[in-house]
Length: 307
Image 1 (cartoon, rainbow, N blue to C red):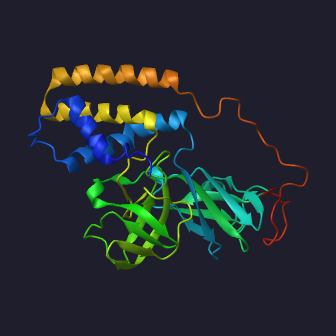
Image 2 (cartoon, rainbow, N blue to C red):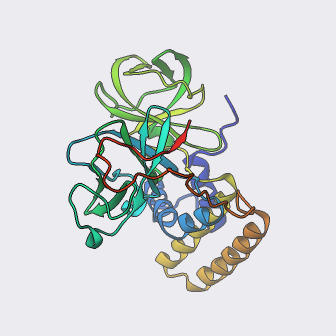
Image 3 (cartoon, rainbow, N blue to C red):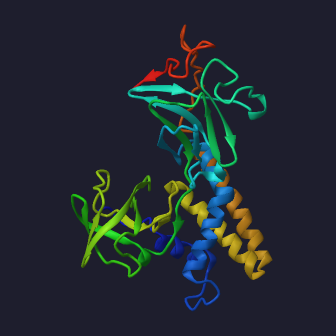
């Protein structure tokens, strides 16, 4: 089990230290401090992370093909947005181009010679409607809400689909949906599972999670005891919450000093960290015959890339 330096408990301690909160602090509960941290993460800090760590929250969901060709945008997609849409047929990945609904002239064919999609409310309409394979929707996943470590359970042993935890909150029961959260960087949400049995501190899940290790956590659905941000952004999150705390308390001089410090920290961090990919993005062009010709039947797929 790695050094446990990244939990929400440590985040709260950092906020209390930097803001000089008294030990007898009765203004903000630990849960309220984490709520402030969630708000700061969901706004400016999220934008900063994605600006130099593009893809940090990138995730996809696969849907079996449906007759309507309509697929729901995942509920945990940031701002209900998508990054990309693909069709998967065996090992072939087929690109789906975004089109405008107002440009459609048919309910079964796109306006171009390849598959297309447009957003319909909170659904994705793919045309022609796929009748083989499945649809893959890429999106940026919203980080789980932060909770105290007492609201989660840290894994101390793993035996297939059964995990032993240090202690189990009373809110956990059979049929509870849980998230397996990574304790160490990069703090991913590893899986979503359902509890099928509880015996003391042994928790059996509906399926084993191959990627989890001792030290990881199980938390209620959409919750995490470990802030899901890069390590280098933790000081920024702490400082942002400190600024907000001073603002809420009406300590405007302190807020202004803290804000200036935040700007210095941001400048230093952005000069230290560069984008993950520094070379110019390559433009991949379709090969000859790589797109479906007009008039082909709906059962035919354009050429795609192969895994």
